[in-house]
Image 1 (tube, rainbow, N blue to C red):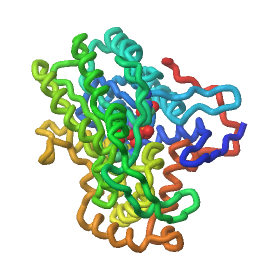
Image 2 (cartoon, helix red, strand yellow):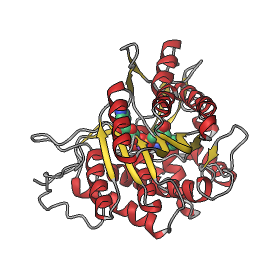
Image 3 (cartoon, rainbow, N blue to C red):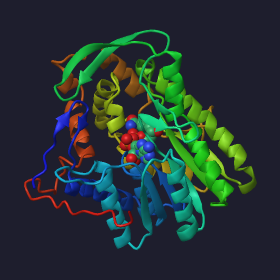
Image 4 (cartoon, helix red, strand yellow):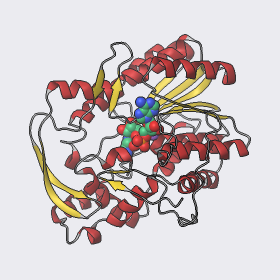
Amino acid sequence: MVIEPRMRGFICLTAHPKGCEQNVKNQIEYVKSKGKIDGAKKVLVIGASTGFGLASRIASAFGSDAATIGVFFEKPPQEGKTASPGWYNSAAFEQEATKAGLYAKSINGDAFSDEVKRQTLDMIKADLGQVDLVIYSLASPVRLHPKTGVLHRSTLKPIGQTFTNKTVDFHTGNVTNVSIEPANQEDIDNTVTVMGGEDWAMWMEALKSENLLADGATTIAYSYIGPSLTEPVYRKGTIGRAKDHLEATAFEITDTLKDINGKAYVSVNKALVTQASSAIPVIPLYISLLYKLMKEEGIHEGCIEQIQRLYADRVFTGKDIPLDENGRIRIDDWEMRDDIQDKIAVLWEKATTENLSEIGDLAGYKQDFLNLFGFGFDGVDYLADANEMVQVPSI
Ligand code: NAI
Ligand code: NA
């Protein structure tokens, strides 16, 4: 069967196994090209199948020869349907890790649930004894709360007032105005429950209570800030409240890890095209302008470049980890450079349907979006019959 991209709205319904494999192999090659990192050796990645979590798993395995356990929620292939990209990514990752003699096992299920936590603890106990790094990289629109049974849905809304600004439909390049109605208190609470720090703290408590964290263990979750331009819909919106909560949770977790010299950090990462960010209004237009400017300056990064730099230049240097005034690791430093943001503010005013492909990197946005699903990679024969018999060996 030949697999083609089938777009519906902001998602692609198909994924290409060989293209996803190529994506993983490219990331592995990048990490290897940058040399060894004296990092963690036994790593749990929660949200390990795409985006920053996948990059974290690859950087740990191929940068520091780490054994990795990956937790994610992905669809396996079914009759007449491809798997979700994260499933193919994980199959390819396990294949490459195993080839390299590295331990790699995965758990496919709801990380918010008690059952998946239980399975993960048992796997660590049986196979690794303890872990020394826990990466928390979940991005989910919903959370079934394990204690109350309530299904919470997150929203992407401004708080206090309607937000009107430009946005782009990246499929067509149409720049239009969009208005987003403000959230009510329930929206805010639900978003904090889904994307805030409660589940991260639950994971760390579960690991600690069964003595599965090594002395000096580190845990890192990912956050975003961005410029004032996107503040109403991001950092000062519902998702921003969740990020505030996540960041506050880092300090609470650190308190609970004192006796084992453990530390919890939040790393603020760069805006990138992922399935999650494509669904947020205004952000795709910002990203198209950002990509153009960062590429011109030679400072553009994808997930793997970000996480490789996070490990090599921030976390595993043998020195204290540099933190901002709010105690966060900043790897969004190049995105937030004044020269970049000043130029974006000017381009933002100018951007129209007619000029966006010139003043912005719409082509780069589209390419990255296709890449998420395994399409558009050099070295993949997209006309060949795609082998559907890919397996995730450990699940
Ligand atoms: P992503 O959508 O690529 O990855 C999400 C991961 O979570 C996948 O592995 C998915 O399988 C897993 N997942 C989702 N629901 C799950 C569940 N119920 N149980 C188990 N696994 C589940 O997202 P991305 O962009 O890598 O986001 C990861 C983190 O990075 C998020 O906290 C996000 O806010 C943050 N971040 C993202 C930025 C961006 O521009 N994309 C920028 C800065 C931070
Ligand atoms: Na991720």
